[in-house]
Length: 358
Figure (tube, rainbow, N blue to C red):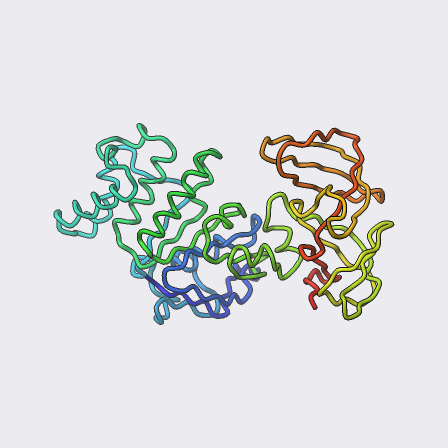
């Protein structure tokens, strides 16, 4: 298990800075996920840790050793890419063994490691097949197995499930979580999919434009986002944001006006003026008397998913609102719903996008 520390890490391409002084600590045995929109710098940061990109400034250390100038092959790291990159003319066994053979490892040790990795990944029956005879999920397991046989101190995953269909991605998420629990090795995983991040990570690092916006456990980010960007990125369907007006604060909280409705948010302090009110679709309800009243909304689209009903509606002032209701609901387009929310599950953001708290 490895402890990874980044101190003011910077990456520049000529005059363009794409990673802006990142500070981060990853503890031994953690499963850490870098998540963010396309172009936020998550893959670049991962490649800097791997030694595939030069670090322009700052320090990268693993287990207390500064590795800025250490070649990738000497960092004790194994990396799994989006592309499986298997040798098509080799069997699964040969694909797993090739790197160890190149390193001139004894044959008995190679055989032992390959068979152990195959057992962990449940690909023992596939060892004599060629990659063309494997499914996408099986190929990805072989790619992961190629990393396991090296027995690294740190695993890096760069969007390894992006090429798989939706059902297989769910299955492989479960398999990777089991693998981490079984091996206990530090893992860093890059994805743009916040569902992957929420379901797999011990700790999530949310990036935007080369800056770390927030680091924390999945439910901490979900329940206590540091700013509007994190609040909107974590959670599916995404959080609703409504433009409103803070009417002043007292000991009980802050008054908020949205359209024709005014209500109080407890535990929040905000000066009078424009604010953004945030509430997740699953925290909005049609049940009367359930906390604050958001107002009447006209239904524009309904998604009947069986276990839940997703409603896309618009308030009287035209602001869009998504509602996630449990179970099957007899709601139709053009219905008018009275919507309510639990004030303790609502958020308020200032003009700078930061979360306003007590």
